[in-house]
Length: 323
Length: 273
Image (cartoon, rainbow over all chains, first blue to last red; front, side, top):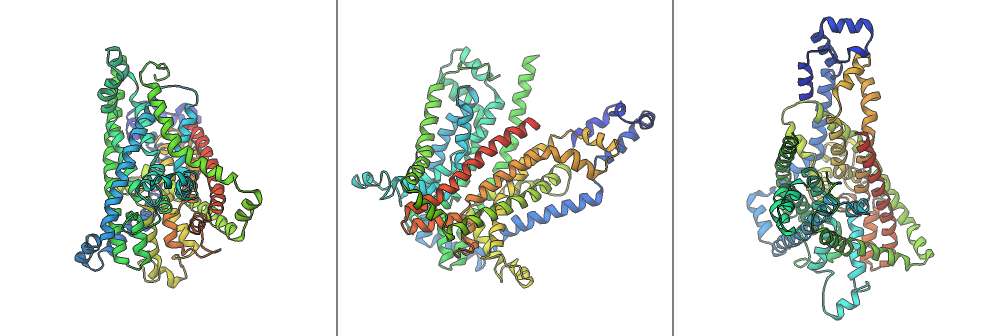
């Protein structure tokens, strides 16, 4: 949009040299009218605009808005009292909420440490195998969550590679919280790293190099320069990672053994209540997860604005530095 | 900038060491376990599982539904990206934001609510079922939820490309006498192809592995609405780990090939942009 505005202010007619002679003269004679005509040629007719916009809004209404509204409508179908009762009175549901928060917290912390290390090594250093590393980090995004869960069953299940050893030592991984954490960490593995790599690349290493020249140690540079610079990008990654961690179903389903009151996370609880035909209770838990998704979206939009501003400021100061 | 900075900054070996350690522990060893387990099967065992009627039907459904959904996502995604980049309308910011909802909404919630919308007494089912359109517990329902889960991919790959198009190119086309449709088809569309393909591949990869949303709406009827990930879970619940692994390897290999393809496509579209 702004591009149109700035080009309009240019005094000379653009593209005149490439058109036919008559056209060129017409443009030279009435430069502004010519531009307006050209601009109209590069715009869609009003009817097309109107129809396309309406179709887009309809698609989003049917695919997204109606389903979200339906979640809350079904959850509140018997009134807010029953809704609240469905959420807090059931011990298994309460347990599921606490378990989900625990698993997501651990998975997010693990992936933040990894994400910062991976983004630093990829954005700040050049080494052989760097492109391969970037691809490997993406693997969990393309692997089916069910296959991911299966992998952990093959490792830690009773017939699995470490199953016998774990049983001898009385350690429970599968059908217990550690298994849920492993599966959740696997499916959310790339989030923080993927968000941080472009942020670190956009900010550039200049400030860190300056700190180095001023005699700062590696950890000083990391805590005083790198972390403050990437904090918004990091928060963005954490929010996306957390949303997926709390909502993961397939991978967690496979490793959980689906034990109510023990290994059921909130999404698994939604499914169990649905199977037990407790529709309102199922939708009550689902509505909490939907709220989480909506909050995630709101924070995401806010943070995107914040990071964009930061990157713009970064490139501005660099620009001033060069001149 | 960063190329000049070969290894000047400290902490290279710590960062790389930890990255590789965690990657190996959490991703490479588990995936390796899957391949090792698969290699312990004889070829006949493997083939008997993967080529059984039930497995073939599940694969056909998974690939077919994911492919159709990804294709529909291309059309919808292009339309949404175009409208969001080119036009102004009230509450546009909010419509733009909710495109990402399928990424933030737990898949189980999506499955649950889609199933309840399209049953005969559901909000949409009330209208659609009398017209003969039954989505709950049918293949149509599977495609519908896959369209939902794949919605953001095409929009978000096409949007930045459209934003970066130079308006003068379109003006030039118009001044040379091209109609609006010709300009779109001959000038704009070719530039969008790499982004569209990337979005398609991302949506396809997501659709192939999707489980949480599909199990609610598909009904999981053998040979009819049973997807491959569901079959893997079913085998696991019968403790048939070998068969589950054989079925999983096929999906895994496809995901890895798709991932490689997506990487190539992204590099290609970056070159075009």
